[in-house]
Length: 215
Image (cartoon, rainbow, N blue to C red; front, top):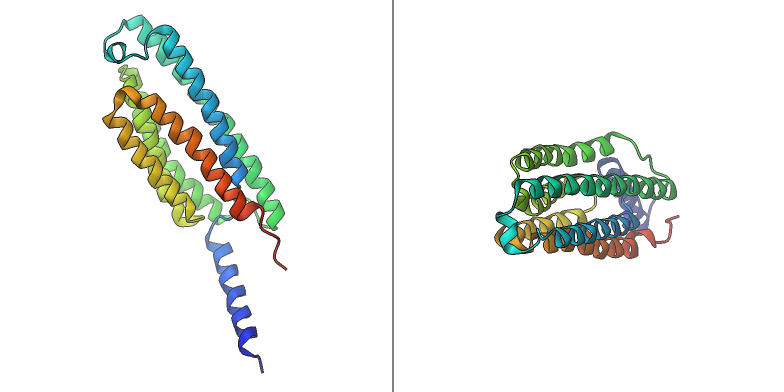
């Protein structure tokens, strides 16, 4: 006959198996840290460029020449794509390392659900932002990227670690803040994608990446 502790151990093992089968657990805090550092670099570069072109002040944010708007738009597209690509590469790499460390499969049905949950809001938001950029509505880029990214994290949080949902809520809050204070949109964007990601990454690294392997 099993004693009480053995039954508790069995229940814990069953719970662990169910969690592994229904949630994506290969997230690494290092991916958040690196994504934050990359976003900081891209945000600071954008700040420098907008300051040098005179686009950063409140007046030029809404009233400026067509030629300058096109130049700034093209720069922001290139800068944003570089940040996005580097962040995705770092996320994939560190998730692969985490999956290898935990003995988990990186690509399975749970991974597909997470990517689908992330992809729908991000793709929809990306199309909407591109349309606005075509109409030179550049001042809405910062709040909308934060809002759609936050909604994507909230959606994906159903299939991964619960901390992702808190990060999503924080990004949504900052997106609303950036929409209210448009002149500070870039600074809030840097706070959301840069600083907040680093803080989140450090927390996740300390909580999950440094945990001793079970067994």
